[in-house]
Length: 99
Image (cartoon, helix red, strand yellow):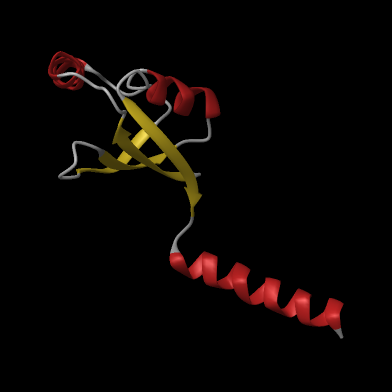
């Protein structure tokens, strides 16, 4: 399953915290059952990461390493074709139920 994890710096994060985060990043490896598909930095000091995993514990582990410095929002995602297919089915179901 794919997830988009968006991290934003927490209020009150110090320069020392930011430096620690850089050191962590330089030596950190993701859990074995979590594959990073894309990882991009934002200008505000946060990041956007697309990960693939079937292990929620691995996702939690990966997030909690950074949790003291970054606030996260995690969203399950699918390729757009699958999302549109689900949307079409939902519209059909709604139309049938409201008919």
